[in-house]
Length: 238
Image (cartoon, rainbow, N blue to C red; front, side, top):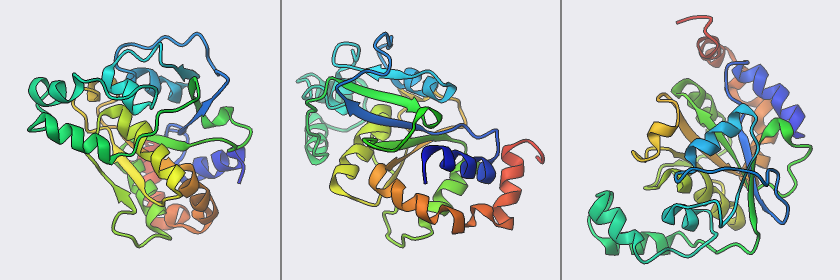
């Protein structure tokens, strides 16, 4: 299923009110070399849903955690103490260090991390992950679709994460492992003000998304139960 064929099926399943997902990948070429990124990149990533292409680099990613979770730079020495003793997101700095080590982040040798809305893609070639910004009703459909061919207890998982880790890190690492997990995220209080208050993220590694494209037409997305949810997503019923 090509990106344009997926969009047709996505609109059929979710309607016009659901934001199209975004795709991300590392590259030697920038899709938007003029990208301006505030200290927290999450707001800039969310704007990709509005059609604005985004390119992150080691220069325009200013946040210490962001540099790590984009795989542009190793973790700065100050990060564990900051996360623990300033933000109070973990009890001790050692917990932070241990957690980051467990993520198996490999520093990229590519200069650019690109994000585009999927309607700007001609193919899925090179894409690392597809990320949805989704309300609970949309998440109902995404999770139902994900569970259709996967009985694993971790078919959909939620992990401790910054906003950028939830969007980028987990899915890219999973993609390189050929895994089948999808990641529910955007619970980070520091990032939440930068996304609509009723939205979370749903990040799918491309290796898994290709499988889901095959199951999409036969899933419950096109059956009666979800059709009622689709009508509410699109404001046809309350």
